[in-house]
Amino acid sequence: MLKKIKSKYFKTEEIVLHYSDISRKRNIFSVLRDKGVEVRFWSDILSVLDNQNVSYFFTLVDKENSHKVSWLEKTIVQKSYLALIKMYVCNLLKTEKGKIVTESDCFQDIYLAKAHNTYQAQGIKECNLTGKGYWGKVTSLSFVNKKNLDPEIELADLLGSSIRLKYRLEYKNSKEQINNVERKKLRLLNRKMKKDKSNFFVLI
Image (cartoon, rainbow, N blue to C red; front, side):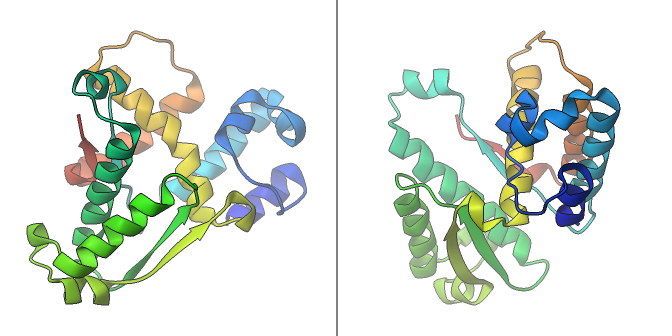
């Protein structure tokens, strides 16, 4: 579906839907400067994001609070991956098997691998899963880059700004102006997360 959207608006499937480029409407994304085209594009993207078979899991760290307790960047990354994997795997108990595909980052990769190995060895007590049980649920761990064109990576990137905005509005009482695109994305997030409040975890 994502390939069809790319072809429809940008005449090629071989591009990366990166939110920072899309929001700036630069290079190939300059066609989105036409408001009508922009609305139709985001409507198509949101229809994919709104798939009932797709769940979203987020962790969020308030940098101001993390600085107060002297958390290093590696502490934030490590705790985030432990929380994300736990939410994901506990949700898998309701279904079958799953795999983890993530955008590779030379700094973060080691912490994701450590979190994965920790649960392989110790299991996840919150969902009564042994290490062997975890091993049977998560069948692979893949590090990719955006050029690999994995739709999961691109869709996650398109939602990142919205979850940060949601936090600022609901937890920090921000009064910032919201454009129509972000308003629609927030409505989708709120609708999705209303069904399962356990998929959004503020670490600090």
